[in-house]
Length: 260
Image (cartoon, rainbow, N blue to C red):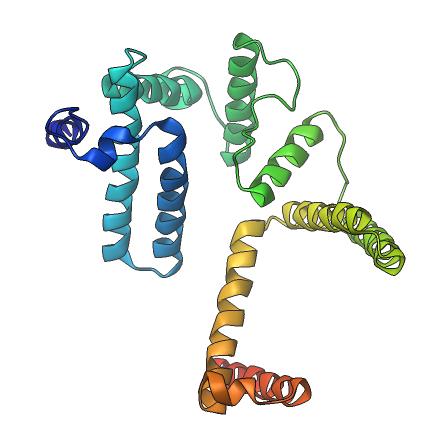
């Protein structure tokens, strides 16, 4: 870690450092931090362990980058970040580092949430909606909002009522489309997506993972369509009906190979 910290310090040196690194600040680096986190998730999804090693290093570098900028402003440094997370993990795992007894994983989850709630109160956050990052990916943020509301009992008892709510929102979407109201359509589409994430939560499915799976499936099928049509030009010369027929054939072919 000392070597990495020294590298970062040299990169940020106003006189002899890298001009690009020197001119960055928290807001300009934040998108790269998010991107690196997604690349970690992508390597895991592809089961690319060599890639995961590299991506974890890139993500660690982002932490060091932010810590160095904070050090320059005399806000905190990497040692403070390190100590803070150590203290937090020990505090939130009293069954490991203290004498509290935890019966199972569900009990541990509840204890973890209780500690987080108490920490938010100490920060002056008293609403269940406090402390949910606005920069979080919107699908995950929806789930977070719903979980927090559920702590107050404002939640569906099962997935079935959520499906009914989805049907209700779908009908409202159709009405907005029929009216040709762009603002209403955006509003209703947001409601549909929000209910979809609620359904995922009730089914114990991460919506981001589900969407990544669908994206990968679509990409695989579309690439197969391009190959079957002889490339982009061949596919572009086909009618929509012909492309739909090809799409269905590709789906069947991929499904058959998966069953073999």
